[in-house]
Amino acid sequence: MSMGPGPLSARVAGLCAEAGHRLGGPTQAAVLDVRKRLGEPLRVAIAGRLKSGKSTLVNSLIGRRVAQTEVGECTRLVTQFRYGTSDRVDVVKRDGSRASLPLDESGMIPQRLGVPRQAIGYIDCMLTSDRLRDLTVVDTPGLSSTNNPISDESKKFLFDDDLDPDSQGALSGAEAIVYVFTQSVRADDLEALEAFRSVSARLSSNPINSLGLFNKVDKLAGGGDPWPVASPLAKSQAEVLRRVVSDVVPVIGLLAETTEAGRLTAADCEALRELAKLSEQDQQILLASADLFKSRDCSVSREQRERLLRLLDLYGISFAVAALSAEPQLATGDLVRKLFLASGFPRLRETLDQAFRWRTDAIKAGWGLSALEKIAGGTQRPADRELLRDAIERVIQQPEYHSLKLIEVAQQVSAGNVELPERMEVELTRLALSRDPAWILDMAGAPGPQLAKAALDAATRWRAFAVAGASPAQARVAHVAHRGFYLLSQRVREHAGRQ
Image 1 (cartoon, rainbow, N blue to C red):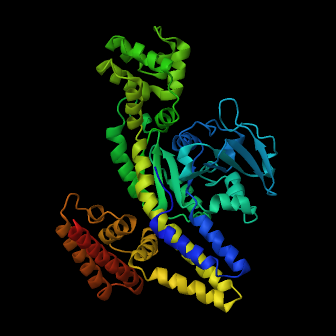
Image 2: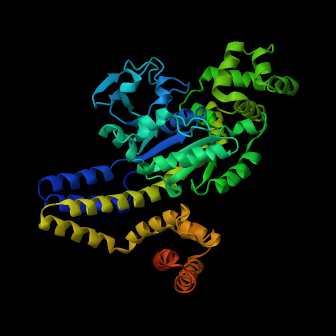
Image 3: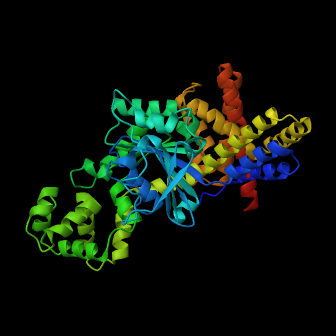
């Protein structure tokens, strides 16, 4: 997964560098600060109810088991995981001072932090994990129950206006939010997510850059294959949550964590091979329930079976045993790969990598330009103001910057601020969310000329809508969409011409 600065934010960072050295004192410092922020990795905030499996998913994303998965002191705090040249945990106090701790003997954040909880702003965890070179993960405290959609702890540590600048910095830069939930979305889940959104405006929370993660889908099928149920269920949940998230991805977080963090040992795989040698009837009885799996007489020790349950749960064990029964010679590495695929996690990684990378680039670039506009408005020196506004104008004139306007109008529509017919809303969202013409136009495998014509037809349709029958707010959106589809048809034609 590579999520370094994208082309749009890199261009704005270039503008900062170029203008920066020609500006005076504080204005120069502010502009160079914007440049630094644009170069930082994608920041993803993970939100969800207590016990929804957030920390398990954080560990899967990092590729190491470092976030505590048992509810304890540190699961009630904001924890930021970012790349560092050595492993280190800093408890950042509300007064801005830091206390450093080592990871515990199992390589996790210690349960006891040695600082009174009310004095802690957040935990800053630096790790040598390569995954974090391109991704900073912010784990947030669990949302609580119905009558109190966001626990006081979350409010206190996430959203207080008097948060110290470090804590605000750790959270306010989140360009993407992943909501984790389990089973079907209940009305109070929706309430909790809406409440999280309303108080997390500074996490630039919007359906466009928020993703729903339907976790623990292995609990759906009583040990059988959950995927035939999980995929359509995730689709219908995406419908329920469409004003809150752009998509819902089903996953089995425990399988993802076990495989991604390299937790299966040679002894674990040996035990699974042993279980695969049992008769089909013995396997069926053992795997009928967790209690039977632990307590029944068997050639694999009870201790080892309990460990397998912690690592894979019943579905993961059944899946591995079936794979080894079908293919007794299956190498350990191949078995781990099959389990990883069965976790559904590759799709989450792909969504973060493809969809969020493109959106983040535009969102970051838009943030950078508005930050520069603000700096220009606040500077005391007319020459500096002129220089900055000039540079911003030059960048905005370039056709690829139309994607910023598209993201902006798509956010208004997807958040329900501007109503559009559903078909048009889907078309606009696709145009704003991707660079892939076939995906935008929903024409997989179509040749270039056909795609160019479809894009031009769409541009014509949006223009007609803008001039006839649209409200002023719809017309503004429609003009942006018209130009977007027109530029898309040009891009497809140029690409076809070069081939």
